[in-house]
Image 1 (cartoon, rainbow, N blue to C red):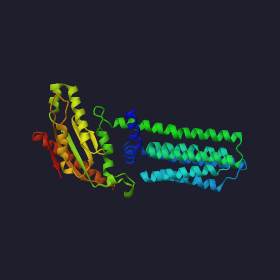
Image 2 (image 1 turned 180 degrees about the vertical axis):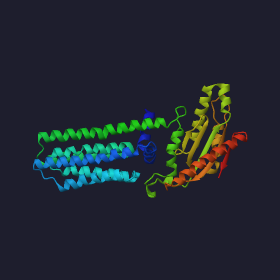
Image 3 (image 1 turned 120 degrees about the vertical axis):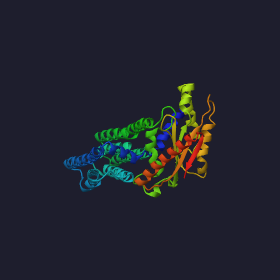
Image 4 (image 1 turned 60 degrees about the vertical axis):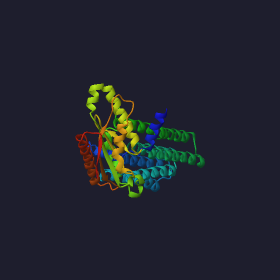
Length: 374
C-alpha cells in the first residue's frame, strides 16, 4: 500500500515533459498527422454548432449570433491554428485548452434548448482527451472540475427556467453523466496507466533507477528549458545556474561476477544504487546507464566541491557484501538555465562526455578515486 501511494503521488507531481513528448512525435514523423487530427476536432465542433442552429430554428428557440461567436468562433480559430501553424508551445497549448473549455461551458448554458446545451458537454471529453495525452494530472483534474461545474450549471439553469420536462431531464442527465464519467474517471485512469507504462520503460528493473532512455528524457528538466514557459514560471530550483554530471563506474566488476557469480554481482549493483541515491539530493537524477556504470545529474549546492569524494566514500562504505567494492568517478559542471536554447543542451551533453572521460582517467590511475573537472 505504501509503494502504491508513493506511485500515485509521483504521478500527481509529474507535470509530464511536453517538450519531450512533442519532440518524440516529430522524430517519428507523426506530428503532421496529429496536427491534422487535433485540428479536425474543431471541424466537428463547427458542424455540431451548425446542426444545433438548424434544430433550434426549427423549434422556434432563440439561438443565433451569440451561440455562433461563443463556440463556433474559437472552434474555427482552433482549426486554423493547428492546420496552418507549427506545434504550439506548452503555455500556448494550455491557453487554447482554457479558451475551448470556457467557450464550451458558456455555450452550453446560453442555449435555450436544454437538449442542445447538453450535447455540447461531449466536447469537454475531446479537450479532456487532449489534456490526458499532452499535459499532467493536475491540469486534467482542473478540467474535470470545470466539466463538473459546467454540467451542474446547465442542469440547475434548466430547472430554474421551469421547463425541465421529463424528456429534457433524461437527455441532460444522461449526456452529462456520460461526459462526467469519461472526464472524471476514464481519462485519469487512462493517463495514469499510460504514465505507469512509460515510467516502467524509463526504469532499470534491477536497481529501480532511471535507465539510459530515462536519462535522455529527463535531462531537459535540469536545463530548465521547458519550451514556451516564461522565466518567472520556471521553478526557483531550476534557476540555479550550475548543474553537475557525475559518471560512476564500479571497479573490477567483471572480476566480482567471475569470482562470486552473477547473483552477488547483481547485489553489488543494487547496493551501489542505494548508496548513490542516498548520497545526493532528493531532486537529483540517478541513472544506471550500462552494466556497472551510473550517471548522476543534479544542482550544485554549497558542498559541490566535495561531491566526487562523497560519492566515492558512499560506494566504498557499502556493507553486507562478501567483497569490497570501490568505484572510479568523474565529475563535470555545466551552466544551465531556463532559456530553452539548443546550445545549452548540447553544452551539457558535452560536459556529460567530459565526466565520462574523467571517470576513465580515474580508472587508469588505479580506481577508487574521483576526478573533478571544473
